[in-house]
Length: 145
Image (cartoon, rainbow, N blue to C red; front, side, top):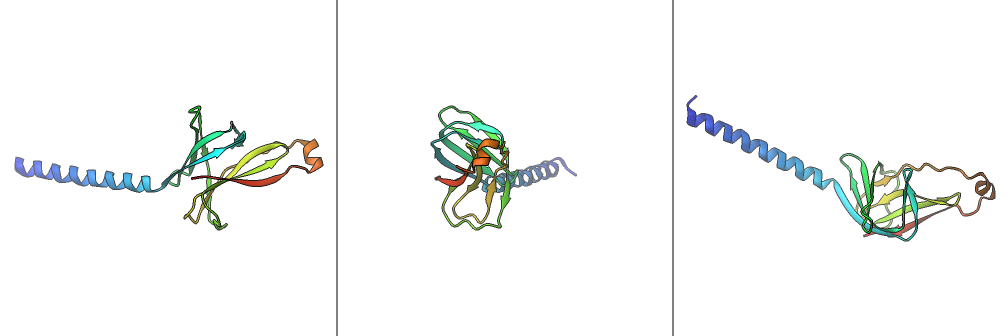
């Protein structure tokens, strides 16, 4: 093989690799969704205590994670989530919370136009006195953009 043909061969290989990397990057970014939500109360997400505030929620379908970042404080948590399609999204983009035993837990993240939603693991520490009363347990939602 002559020197010019080796150079052309290396250029062709480099171009092919560059196109492959660009395509893979595009596919990965297509699987990431970012939403914003104002949460006016403290809550827990997968054993992480989070304060009230405006959050950017990044959903990555590729590695099944949620990242919640408080815009005011810059604090963030990464959570392994589970995507489910068994329950239709009959609303817009929103966060679903569960209030149980006096605490609030993030349970789901919904995105308008998607047939799947992200489930957040919930680790509820039962308060026996509150549980005995059976009061205050509820599920509610906060709209997101």
